[in-house]
Structure formats: C-alpha cells, structure tokens
Amino acid sequence: MKPRQQRMLAVGLVVVGVAIATGLTLQAMKDSMMFFVSVTEVAEGKYPDNRNFRVGGLVKDGSVTREEGSLEMNFLVTDLRCDLAVSYSGVLPDLFREGQGVVAHGRLREDGVFAADEILAKHDENYMAPEVADSLAEAEADAAAAKADHVREKTAGLQEGPTGCPSNDS
Image 1 (cartoon, rainbow, N blue to C red):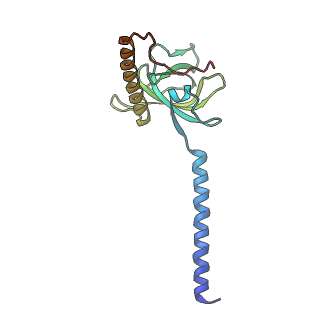
Image 2: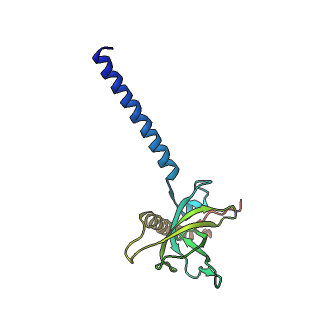
Image 3: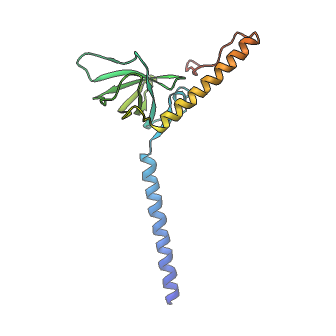
C-alpha cells in the first residue's frame, strides 16, 4: 500500500470509530432521558407511555393525605388548569408543603394516578423549576383568555363558560 492509501484508510477508520461512538452515546442518552410533562398534557393523554417522566406544578391546598405511621402519601398537583393525583411512598423533602411547587419523577399507572419514585421541592421562595414556571404561566394566560372570552360571551347573551380540563370519560 502506498502512504497515501494508508492515510486514507486511517482517516476512514477514525471516522467509522467516531460514528460508532456517537451512535452508542446517543442510544445511552435516549434510554436515560426523562421528559417533563405538564399536568394538562397528562390529562390530554400527551405523555410518554411505559417510561418514567417528570410532572410538576403546585401541591393543591388541602389535598395531602397520609395514613398514621405510614410513608405512603397521596396529594394533588395542579397547573391551575387541571389536577393530577400523585401517590408517593418515602420521605419527603423538608420544603414539601401545600401550595408550593414540586416536580415528581415517576410514571402514570393504569388507574390514572401518578406513581412518583422521587419528589423534588423548590429550595427557596424565589425558585421554581423552569418547566413548572412556564407551565403555570401558560395556564394563567389561558385562564385570563378564557375569562375574557367568557365575559364577551356573557355580554353577547350566551350562557356557556370557558372550557376546562379535558376529561378522560370518553
């Protein structure tokens, strides 16, 4: 083989090696990637099936229930449009409380309850996970638009209110 052919072979092998390494890395990242889904998206059925994902929002006031002497806890997470029942067994973060932002990692069970493996609570009064903040801001904007539409409809003589959370009854 001539030196030029040897260099071309070496360059070709390096390119193939880098392509294989990139493919393996991307495959590993795909398996460990965790998606963030809003509570409304879960209610609409827009969440990854058969894999863990994150859901976040505010812990709804008055929704936290725990049996005496048990680590099993149930509560509702809301994005101000829809609510999602969450079940968690374990020790909660110190900052977990009603009305505060949380992110839950887990998967949706067949009964429609989100089974959380991990609960993350915001760490101070000014911080909220960017995904949760965006979801809540979008919900507030939609609520304001729905209220304006409702007022417009009311003044036009229509009696229908704004649409709410999608139901899973159909």
